[in-house]
Image 1 (cartoon, rainbow, N blue to C red):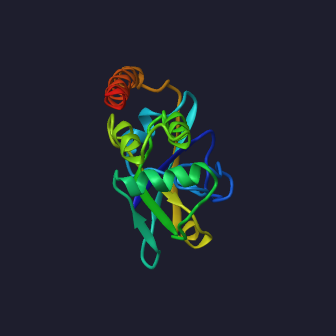
Image 2: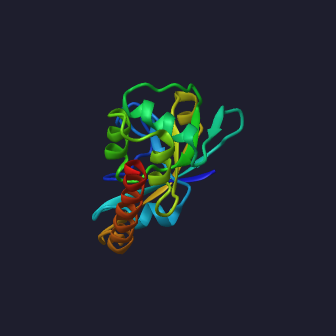
Image 3: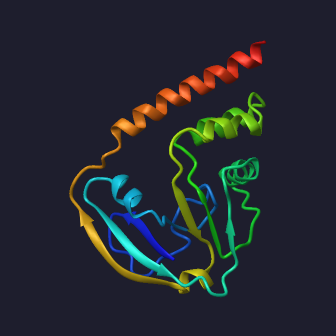
Length: 176
């Protein structure tokens, strides 16, 4: 599997313990199989690292956008990683995930409502390498420096508009 990781430097040997512990799929080294996404969402002066993952004997789990996916992210955002796979592949939760999960915690939104909000916008895939075994099967191919700013302002504005409309619809349904 060809994968990309955007950061501030070349990363020839990924460290699965360096990322945020409360990320979508818990601790791990995060990548994407979508080369265009890696470049489009990179910050200015970033480095896009390219890897090849030998899946062979790895325990790999795949999520789709579903209530199970939302629940897994919800638990990880609260520091409770409930899966022991070598690699987890699935959709990236959108930028409002902290707000969405906070509203669920308050009891105001159900998981099904959260899923409606998280379904807004394009679906991008993330791959979390979660074990040393998997990291050992990740071969660095090379890296490229990016000196231009990301090109995502229009997509972000369209997403914000769609999210606001969907949240209003959910709130209107709650009032009736």
